[in-house]
Amino acid sequence: MEERTSSSQSWDPERYAKNARFVADLGMPVVDLLNPQPGERILDLGCGDGALTAKLVDMGCSVVGVDSSAEQIEAARELGLDVHVMDGHELTFEGEFDAVFSNAALHWMGHPDEVITGVRRALEPGGRFVAECGGYGCVDTIVKALKEALKRRGLWEEGVNPWYFPTDAEYRGRLEERGFEVNYIALIPRPTPLPGDIGGWLETFAESFTSRVPEADRPAFLDEVREAMRPRLCDEQGAWTADYIRLRFAAVKKG
Ligand code: BEZ
Image (tube, rainbow, N blue to C red; front, side):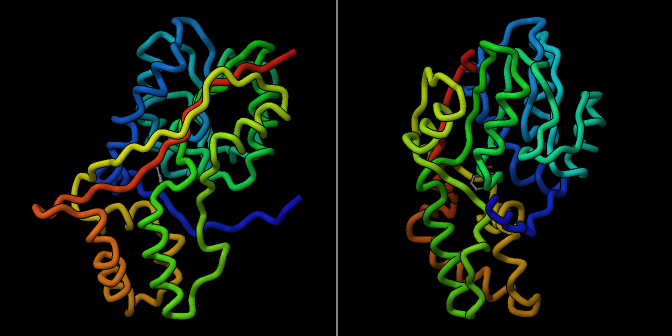
């Protein structure tokens, strides 16, 4: 097995609610693709603070959520949800679910074959795996700006980037090799307006990059990154839009 890269990303539910509420708000297309039916047993993989988990519960499903962040799970538990701290690479469920659902989480899991194998094990035969995550080219402008600013400081290493953004062809292959029939898979460019300055996004999602920089140099580092991105991601009114590309798919467990 490849060695896992250790991401220094941490999750603060308050910061997440302030800077990243759009993640769940923009999750309805993948919920629609899941087409959840009342009474279905659903695993929400990478449930975060439970915003979409709660939506699935409201739709009449019996939902278990898992996430590797104890802080996010605590926030989700406060909503009264059935949620557990669990690494998506090490799912422990066996044939318990009609569907596994995931929004904006798989790109944080750098060993996709382990994830897909665990998802397959968790599903009943015929069960669905329906998900959306960052896809190939997602936040390219942001990654390039962070990488260049780290390089200038001699702080760049390959393992710093925590994100896995596959093409549709690559992910389809992984699913098919692991016993899924893929009914739909697509890369979908989705420029995403941010609720404030790009600094809030970096603070929330890019800690694996920013934590490399000594604290005293961090404001200068962030200014440099912001100015490098501005021509592509900020309009004349000062509104920022992140260059998201989504990978969305629906697959069924064969056999
Ligand atoms: C997301 O939440 O979808 C996301 C987070 C970090 C990078 C790209 C996408």
